[in-house]
Length: 134
Image (tube, one colour):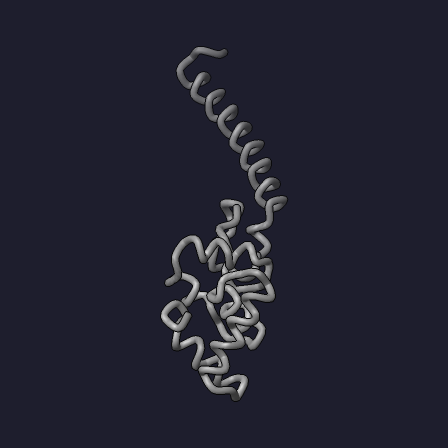
């Protein structure tokens, strides 16, 4: 069990709780048995409960453990890729007014109307110049 668990995370949990590392390892094993999960998942869940950021530790784990942690249903700080509309950047926290879908729809409509009108006016003018229309 000691070989699988991340020593850095165990020491952070021990620091937060005030217990010794050996005691933390034992408690992780008990929590894993109680929840019927792996000890790594129990360790990550406990660290999250204590407010320790765990995303960097999760990324270093095997894919099978990552999926178990995601499916454990607890908040891990791990966010799977979600669909985002084309106008929202992934690092953007606040949506500004011109990134709202209805504003873009209005702009597209206005550009379409003016673009169509303008092209009609220009083509009529060119046809008059060339003498196609009298």
